[in-house]
Image (cartoon, rainbow, N blue to C red; front, side, top):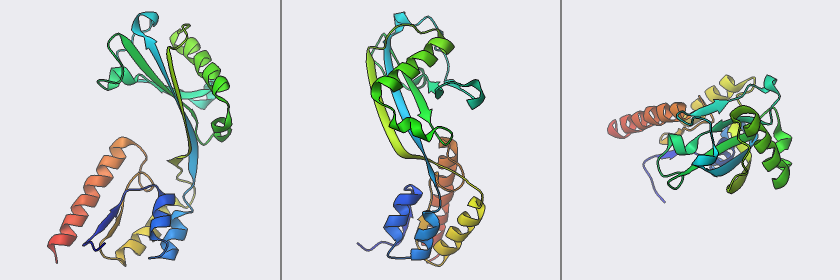
Amino acid sequence: MDADLVILATPAYATASIIQGVDAAMAGVLRQIPYATMTVVCFGYDRERIAHDLNGFGYLIPKEEGMNTLGTLWDSSIFENRAPEGQVLLRSMMGGACFPEYVNLGDEEITARVKNDLATIMGITASPSFVRIFRHHQAIPQYTVGHARRVAALEQGAASLPGLFLTGNSYRGIGLNDCVAAANRTAGEAIAQLTSR
């Protein structure tokens, strides 16, 4: 396939595989960006069974608190149509860089740990009517020592390949806002390159 430009917004490890045949050095740098695991646990409840006010985003938990979860998002409060009328969806996260082994826990153990944390923090004692568990072995890029040097090397490599752009959460911020800002910046650079030809 011929293209005037290619924008790769894939995770670093996927981008490495894609460009291996084009620039092995860049692929090697991309493979140096480690990823933390994440287990995402979705619980659904009848709204009437939760006394806690759900008018908000949810919460994050510092690891010093000694909980099993990193936090819980009140998905049905944040996003429309995430749960049927009269139901709520809570999405809890476990693992991360501090607890990578959590991704290997069994479903029953994960469910018990999340239920325990929700009982402690939100006072939820009811069992969820809906449970879904998603394990991500490469979920969150980690900006370890030397990350700025790696990003600079990737920028230099991409500059030597006109028409190649790298963006996404592997480079300058993992949050949604960071990704939107990176996407806007990359789109602007791509348009500038196309119009300068």
